[in-house]
Length: 158
Image (tube, rainbow, N blue to C red; front, top):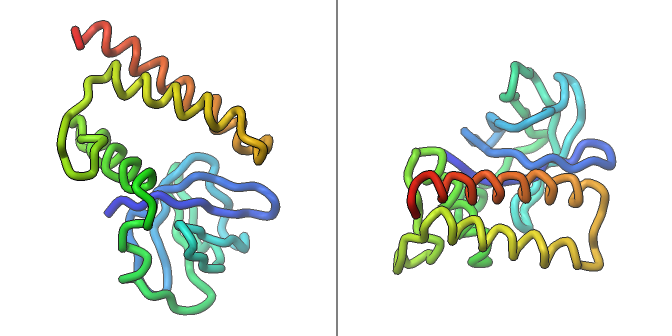
């Protein structure tokens, strides 16, 4: 399973991948995850669940929800196509393949096209009114990934 989400810890937000999900908890994957015992809120689209971190090891952690969630709603694709493209692209990249950015599978972009699209997204987000320090830090990481993809596209002959 791969679902993109956001973990809210105090005033900070952390991007996470939900690797496993049940009515009472989740296996999360991400950088700088909170320690066991911390209260958090997991967000995905308009869904939210409060919980407590129960274990943490390297880049994975276990989250126990304070109440039960509707797993079917959580695994359903988030309503907007941008999130669907992100979910498809990231899942495919983790499986060492290039996914179509078009949800219908109409074309398979090159690494250079993916890099260019990421650059455009970064520029649009950087100019948005809702820019926060947390978002700016994530944009820097996204920009670095876009540059790495651009470099890879040159070596792959795309």
